[in-house]
Length: 173
Image (cartoon, rainbow, N blue to C red; front, side):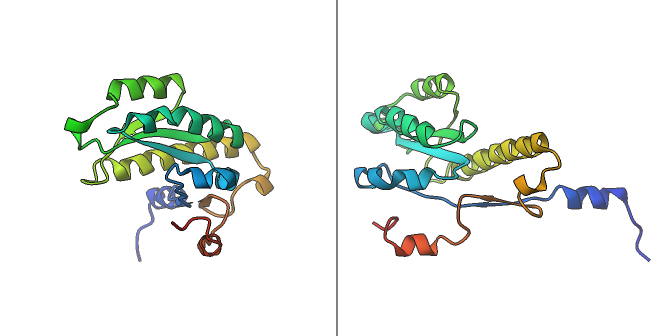
């Protein structure tokens, strides 16, 4: 007979699966007309700029305004400077981006998709904060089970199956 430990219940109670649906417009103007569909139900967002191209950082303010205009005030937002590995080509100082993020009350991180620096960490940090926000909201709602996600799973995003969205052509290049 196996021994039972109270720790076993604790471990089972606090394992949570978070499903994230990732949409990428790559900041392209052709997606401006349909971006409200991207924002619907969003609980987290990564606003990514290229540290080697100042204009991409300058556009972040417009994208942030649009994002905030279409989402809930509790949406978790992270400003991400990508291509941090290209130090010799840097056009946006980390300090400038960090100051902007603090002023706008967003998280901030620099990444490099080329060498995978902080890429997983950016997603993990946003999803962890999303979980905190959703958990806090669940505690505020209390026993209203209709307002809570079912089971131990939180579905981040509107649809479980994005293949139908991809088939419509909105997300393909």
